[in-house]
Image (cartoon, rainbow, N blue to C red; front, top):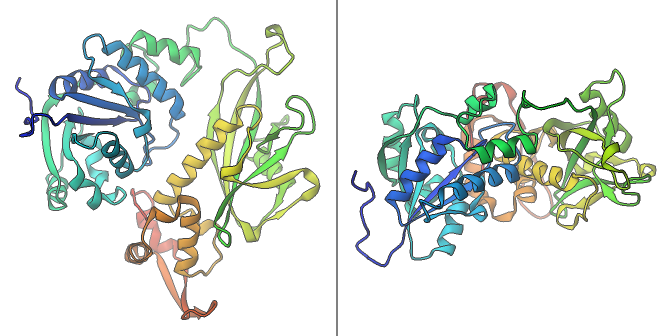
Length: 434
């Protein structure tokens, strides 16, 4: 089969494919795509990434590791496949910009599956992304292309090609649901068992006993000082005596996970308006310092994350808790560094693709109040204020109260409120608010 990607007129230009995938876990289908891409391009840059349209993904570090095992497996026959974890970002635009800095003279082609085409119109700054790369669409079994989606992409300047290739009917979702290892290379199957990922392996020799704990990542947005804060607690007992950690607790007899999460929150802060959701379950074995392997204790850590407004929170000072700016957080006890990183990633993603900001804002707010909250969490360059304002008003779920407020020397600003009824039809649709 001839190459689908036409050679560049500049013979010195590197033809580079950019292939990001959830890799949760990587299967023979990923292998087939990578083998095919290696035949079409001079180099194929591969990475695992978080998909903001999916919930409950395995921690990224595990998916990167499994993808690395697959590439290592393939490199004897396809030496032009490389794992590039620095390209991983939930904003594809930032991925492409990083690739452009890494390979400034390369001819870049972004590889996407047919299953993501319908969501691309909601991608962050898609109009800015498309002119920077060619687009190669690879068929996913059972997912049909919609002509109107292709027409829209072309209208936005997409230079797209549909690959003459379809991979095997093996999906990561099927593995997660059924647990069969037939679609995995042995190195990945072994890694999953070793790290205790997904469902328990039925061939495991013994069932471990667990102690169940809840760990909370509580973020606060201080818009006055442009700071994203996280609540930390200094430990007053072993293990890790005197070290900082996230507020957590063991689940008591007869207590639900949600009740345990609420209990530890009520011991650290007083707040009326709170957004709280389950983050992830971490189940790696942990050996407490000073204990022998014979007395190993295994913990199932269910993490939650909360977003609260700084002005609305009262710290309970006698409980040893303190707000830390995220960029100044010290090394944390247990596996809390990993939990915090995962929580921050989820917070940024939720802000971009869901209306959680309105859970922590006052009932009425200005558009500048909303913009300040977003810029504090995502960074000042996340969006231009004018574009942010236009997009939010166009979506139609902000209700103008007809009232105005004056702050400082500026002009009076309109007060808005979040209209949950107007938002209801959009609830299950992938949206980019910023």
